Image: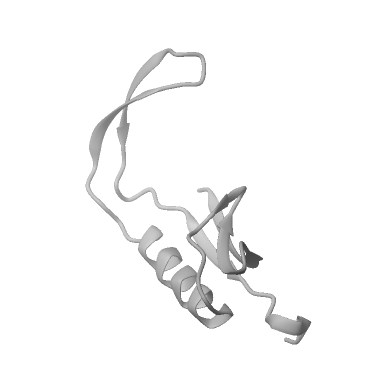
Length: 86
């Protein structure tokens, strides 16, 4: 099973959470970004429906797969509070 880390970071004049290289929207405060990251991480872990999916890869080839709705990633939120305090 894969894992996703939601990291709280300063971004674009405010705060955001980041997963890999992708940033969320910018929030006005650290606490808002932290709450949004915790919510997103919790929702990411919820089981869904098993269904067929079709997608195109970076080379333009199309693929069909069955996505198991129970195969959800483990998530964690990594927080560095403002000012570096823990």
